Each structure stands twice: as structure tokens, then as C-alpha cells.
Image (cartoon, rainbow, N blue to C red):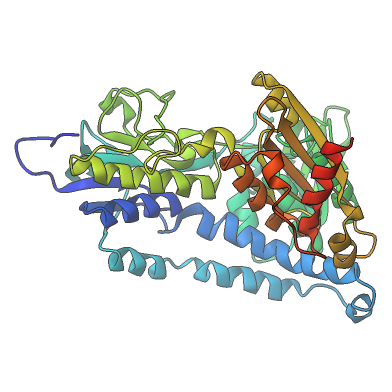
Length: 470
């Protein structure tokens, strides 16, 4: 990593994108002694803070709390009315600070990072154009995130559909809502708006949350149906139209038409690379990154988070950012970067131990590989399944608790390579599995990790017993 000209550059590092990932790169590089500029064209804090993780979970939480009370005898009698939708929306807005990023901007300043407002694009090696100004740096990091993908459905774009931004920031509840997409966002937002009083129809071309074990999608579908959502899997939407009165109609391949007040499209995202200027750096949009997030074939350009397509989850992007920021600072000092697997400057876990939670009801919490993925990688694995309802902690947690847990075990190394938990409030179970996978803890040693009784974590004992005595 060398200076961009004979003169000292304006900054050591310029980060393009001031979301959670960009903030973390900037912070860790600054801690390492680098002079850092963070450039943001929208709100500092990014998608997760204002339109994704935080507001969506705030919308979901009230409904989850009510259903949790309904599942416990004695508490059930205290539930006497419907959700206060206005109060839920107000609580949601509080988590976004009313879409005011001044608090985040103040943090950037307090961390010693220079905040620049405006659209940034690369204009050559170590050069970034922000508005009419051109700045130079030893290194540049792209943290521009991802943008929604609109499927090629006739009339859809003209129908002005909701995307996830509109769905998480809306201030009124549509009486009827069509959700197109059976992935994480589609399922979570279908739950959220159904709990707030919308009549929701969910249209999915395949099954639900197909990235996960098949039983996860089946249980999420059952939960949605129980909440009153009309779930249509294996369904193709051929056309969407919005009438003069504002209503929208979705036509299915079968010829059936479904009318609603709004339509939400949640069919995936792609890296946000439009007008980033990659061509000026001699890099194509199909670039790859090394584990320190250095773009392959360069020694100055980094791409971190959703923009690199490796593991498009906020927490994983922040993990990449911590590694990249520290690596950039070390390289600027002329120090070697610890780039061996599991070193301080690499994101090794992206390949084997990515945790993920779907905040539906039931929740889906998983980490690592599904059984099918493990076999595709050539591993000799065995899947171990246990009914979560048989665990004492679960039966205390809710009357007639239902759920399922699976461990995927590499038989040759006798270590866990994947785990999935489906049930109410299982999100907090996944970190123990993440530690087991990252640490490559052998099954014989896991026997000595005794779960407290009576907690839902006792599922670990049941899984190990089932593995030992199938």
C-alpha cells in the first residue's frame, strides 16, 4: 500500500458508505492510527439502523410478546384486546430516532473520523470524487451495501410497490397487503403486518426460507398460517397493476387475481455497485475479495459487507469490517497483517460459521452448514434431530411448546459443522453452536459443557444423547 502521488494524500483511508459496516471499518482503522474519512450520501448508520434490522424487529416484537403471553396459562387471561398499532409504529420510530442521524454523526465525530456528506465514486487509484471535490488516500474501502432486486413481473414497477424501506417506515396499516417473496424479509414482514391487523397474502415461487433446512420453512409456513396469513407457495405472479383508486391486483399464472391496498416486494438484494466507479480502478463488478477484504488483484481497494456478496448479513459485515479496518491500519504502519486462518485481520468465519436468525414465530436460528450444503462440500456428515418440546425448559417456556433442533456432524472429525433451531425464542441458542463450530470443539468435549436446568439450552444434552444412542 503506497501513497497515491508524490504528495501526502488527504487521508490514509476513505470509506465509501457510512452504514454499520462503514462505521466499523473507519473505527477500527482509526484505532490503529489511520486518518480516516467516511462518506455517506444518505443517513449515517445506514440501512440496518433506519430501514432494516432495527425497525423490522421493533415491528415484530409486540406481536411476539402477545403470542408469548397467550401460550402460558395464567398469563393468557391478561390478554384482553388487540395490539395498539399506533403505539407499535411509534415505538418502531423511536428506534430510528425519527430517521434523524445526528446521533450517529456525533459518534463519528467523537471517534476522530472525518464525516463527508455526498455521493462518492472512485476516480482512479486511491482517488475518490465527492461532489466536485477529488480526495486522495492510501486505501479506499467500499461499504455501499446492497439494493433490492425488482423481479421481472409485468406492470410491477409501474404499480409503485413497497420495498423493504417502505414496509419498515410506513405510518399506517394497510387493511390488505400482498407480499411477494418467501425469503427472510418477506416472511418477517408478513408476520409484522399481520400482527398489526393487515390481511396478508404471501406469494412465493418456491418454498419459504429455502436457504435453511427444509423443516424450518415448513414450520414458518405453519406459523404464518396460524397468524392468519394466506400463504401461497409454488406460486408465480405474472402481473401486478395499480388501479386509479390506489388498490393493487396481482394476477397469478393460474389466472387467479388477488386485490389488496399495498404490495410489498421482498425478492432479494444485490450489491450496490451502480455509479461506484469500479472501472476507474480496473475492477469489474464480478470482483472477489481476500479474507482481509482486499479486492483481488489490487493492493489498495477493499470491499466489505453486502457489497462483496460473501455473507450479506449486518453482523457478518461488521465482523468483516473489524478485520479489514485493523488490517488496513497494520499495513499502513508497514506491519504484517495476521492473515492466517482465524487471525486478527481475516474474516475466516464467512466460510464455515455464519450465524443467522429469522425473527418469525417460530424463530429460525441457524449457523454453519445445512446437511445438504455439507454433503455438497464433500463432507461425510450425519444429521441429528430432536424435538425441542421434550426439553423441560421449553415446556416451562410455553404450554405445548413445539420446535425442532438439528446438529450436522462431520463424522470424520467428530465436530459440529451446522446447527438449526426452530421454535419460540430460540435466537439466543445459536451463539453456543457458533462457538462450537468456530472452536471446532469435539463431541467428546461438548459432553462436558453442561447446560443449566431447566433451560432450553438442555437441547444440547438431548442432541448429544441422540447422536450417541440413535
